Length: 306
Ligand SMILES: [Zn+2]
Image 1 (cartoon, rainbow, N blue to C red):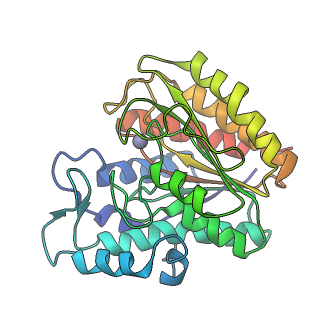
Image 2 (image 1 turned 60 degrees about the vertical axis):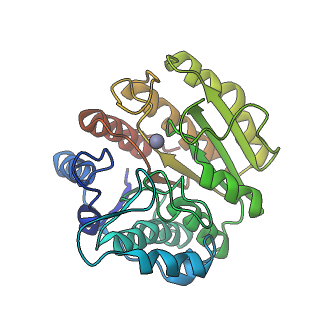
């Protein structure tokens, strides 16, 4: 079974400064994993600005480009950093998702994993935040719609609520966003009663929750909503920071939980979407856990075919 893995070493040059959890070492860890697993990778291409402009107004894109420093780093907020290569890295991060979607629409791929940074799910239409510059997965979802994959489900198991994806799903038709996340926790959105039937489903987990609560959230809430939505494409915001070893949150998942949820999503994709699943890296800040969880995720993407 094959999985297309899209990546680019420009992600190693997005410099967030010393001690930052969203570090180049995260991508290097995954590049090492692909080598160890004997997986070939596809060199990602950059996104056209017009593709990004479907999700973010051009004035935001221009302002971000203008803010790029010639040297060193600057802070956009307490934890979102720009370095000289950051704009280009962000173009390639969004581009990788568009490329995966194009290959899927052309029948050249069924399962894809985009291993890029910076991540994207916190980026709102006109605000970079939470380490995110462009909302990579949403740019890809909107690109998919132009290629005939009209109904796109984005499932976000990153431990943080993807506020940017949530906001965008309320603005764009036929894109369904479902998130499980620790709550309250940064960015403190996606609380109870903050869902829109058919557009946004937010399921909260409490600090200290583990496998049972996580799997129940999917079985009881997310999977039924996906059956009702009947997507043409399933996209995954694959953050691995709900792992028990992650330093930024207090959810206690293991590798097997990521393998399980991925396999179940692949089965749903087999039922409705011709098997098409595009997974996009979001968070995950304990490097050994990131590696083992990504390995489990890739195993599930590769194995759960009809
Ligand atoms: Zn996260």
